[in-house]
Image 1: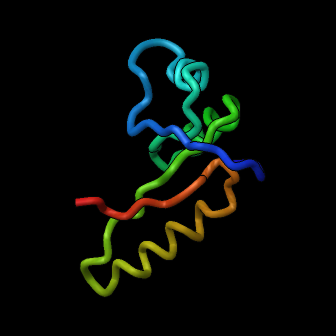
Image 2: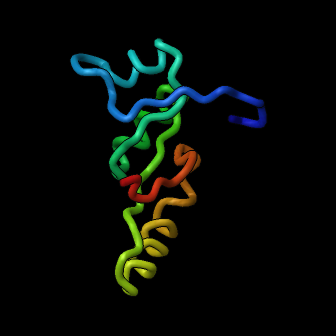
Amino acid sequence: LNGKRTFVLGLYQLPQGTAPWRRAADAGFHVVHADPKPDQLAQARAHNMHVWLTVGSKRKPEDEARIRKFVEQWKQHPEVLFWETEDE
């Protein structure tokens, strides 16, 4: 991360309760699975964290275009660390 070798710690979900981004950052996490929403990216940035986004899977021919459009829309955001496809 940021040009340094890092053992990345991530969360599939933010902690419950108040100030979840702060609590995750204070606990030493680097990345959180997030919805592709500007407010989520802003929270990650504000807490010096990253997100990963799920692009879904390619089951039908038209899915490739949907995935490419999704990646194009979000790839310029420095908070996006990586993409995830469907994992089951």
